[in-house]
Every structure is written in C-alpha cells, then in structure tokens.
Length: 209
Image 1 (cartoon, rainbow, N blue to C red):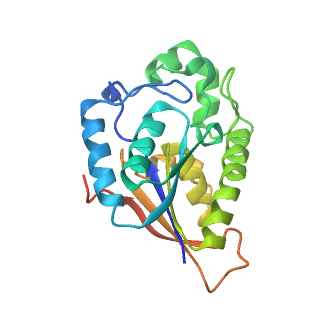
Image 2: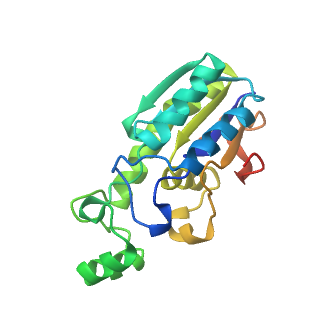
Image 3: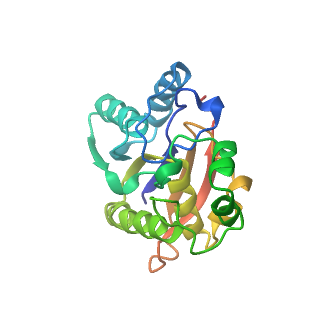
C-alpha cells in the first residue's frame, strides 16, 4: 500500500497582501523557510521514496530540500503549477474588481466557461492537473511506495475534488489548506479498479507547524 502526501508550499513573502500568484515565481518568507524545515522533519517519518513538485520556487525549493534530506529523487513538473491568472497575476481582489468589474462578477458567479484574462480557464486548469497526476497515481499504486507532492492550494483542491467526486472549485472558500499543510491519500486495496484507487484519510494536517 502506498500513500500520496499532497503538500501545499510554505508561506510566501508578503502573503498578507492577499495577492493572486499563479505562475508568478515568488519566494518564501522567513516563516515559510521555517515551515519547510518543520515539514521535512515531519515527512522524514513516512518512508517516502520519491518527491514531485511544481517547478515554481515556492514548491520546488522545499521539495529539493526534502529530496536531499532523504536521499531520494525529485521530479519537478510545470504541469503541477497553480492556475494561470493571466493579467490578474499579482493583483488583489479589490484591484481586480476595480479594473475588470464585469469579468470579476463572472468569476464570482462560478461560470463554468470562465477564463482568467490572458490566462487559463478553470476547465483547462483541471484537465492539466488531473493529467499530470495520472502518472503519479499509477506509480504509487503499482509500486506500493509513499510519494510526496509539493504543490499549490488550487492544485490540491482539484485533485481532492476528483477523489471525493466533488467540484471543490465551487466551494474553494470552504476548504482550508494552510501553508505547508499535508493532505494524505491512501491506496484503497478494496477498490483497485477505481479511478483513482485512493481514499482521503487526512486533510490540512498542520500538527508539525
């Protein structure tokens, strides 16, 4: 039986400004660096054999530290990036609402065909994430090994929605995923033919922080 540990990246710089950073490559705060250390200490107990991450620094850096600490391989994938907010990258909600009020209303209405201006649509993002996870899921199921995935909040919510058969993008504000939190999927031996054959056993674990 193999587990997949889905880990949100540690705290970013200036996170209290509540700006939308999707593909923007932003660094970690001092608190985030401390969280990375605590995260590695927590995951060292799990016999992890492989770590995947987004290629953006806030996820890639702690993943590389974990791989070095455990002497395991680290695979960095652009397919594990957060959604591309397009021209809204780096803006606050208030700035977005002022600049594009009509588009902002469509976003908040959860229109299924909504696309971030000059960025991705929700459907494109979900397709990219689920495709990227197929190989990870097959690897964990086939080898029975524990795998860590350090990525972004929207990415994790999309995958958890697939596991519980729910559109978490429509309840995003209701699902709390703290910086450096761990959500755990366990291979379900009773349903090996399920897609994917995993069950959710923990969400937003932060006991290590």
